[in-house]
Length: 167
Image (cartoon, rainbow, N blue to C red; front, side, top):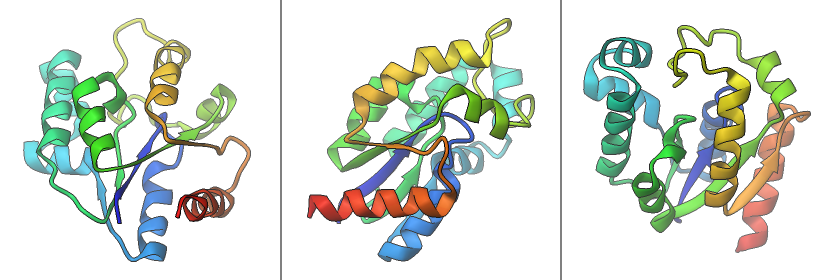
């Protein structure tokens, strides 16, 4: 089976949903943020704070391009869509699913923005990055699942239904 790539805003459920989808479908699971941290031997927020956003995005792109996965559910960092190279690489080997949540849901779910490793420039608001990223998520998505008001289980069921309709 092709890879399943989950994209979306921080707190959209990519990692949580991804693990369950992988178990259900008998696939491997990887979180690109965790792979990046392991390769760099430090936390995302530490990289952003010490090396800057541009360098973080370069490292993120390099990490994604270095992946050689098959039959894997991949949860990407919310900023992965800033790299056209990385997203095109992911799309070549998989189905991209955008977990769309509205801004109200982002604000409700995202509690640890200062320590979570969210790519946020000084003075930039969460609403601003939401507006900047949303068209990118939509551009790269093969499937969009609106999970603003859905539970994790409902989101998973929606994904499985959409994947089943592709086969």
